[in-house]
Length: 269
Image 1 (cartoon, rainbow, N blue to C red):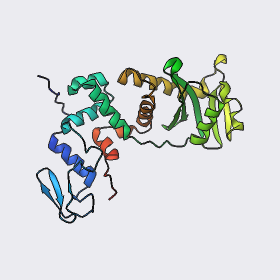
Image 2 (image 1 turned 135 degrees about the horizontal axis):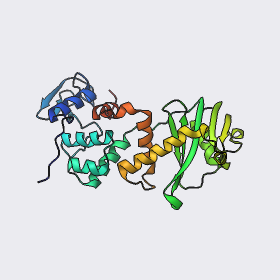
Image 3 (image 1 turned 180 degrees about the horizontal axis):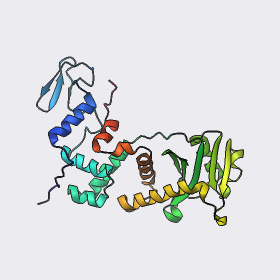
Image 4 (image 1 turned 180 degrees about the vertical axis):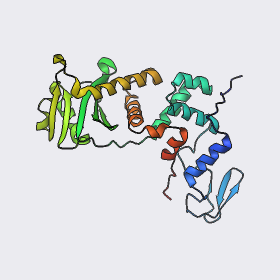
């Protein structure tokens, strides 16, 4: 008989419900539709005496269609936040790999989508994923910080126009920009007001782009270790997950911290 492993870091169902109630409703239960506190509990659901809305802890959140027990969901989320590989997560939860991939994709879909503007001193580089028919990825890093920005092309042939688009979208003017010696960056300061420096790798110059090149290495290791590989259609999801993990590690300390940020009512209070 297949069973889910019981780990000490997975709360009881009652504790999970207590966490969710605290995150979604705060100290006092209220109706998500009319906001009144005049509600009563009926078994596992609640009923508003004012507008007669019936609701549950999850009914007005992105977890409203959860079909697995809350402890199982918490375990899947714990594995994802702690970067447990998909195959190992499947063994721990006794769920199929398609189910694990599905939930990991759901968790990614609720990560912040907005990217910050890079400024002061920025390193920019490009890399290629998927081989001949793959995609090019621009990645910028603000030196001395955890701020990243990225742009994924629909092909693997970047040109100066793509580099310029990345700059005017994600890099502040008057920034010091360090790149390698690729032709797409030549005279890029004529296209966007930056102070441009270049590393010529053929001359063994690497100091100006070492941080962003290191980030590419960490990204490839993350994808290979956790997901084994990535298809072109999933590349944007995994790159976004990696960048949010790098820029906001506090969000992945635990399932509670992740839910605290992402679990919100569909309507504002």
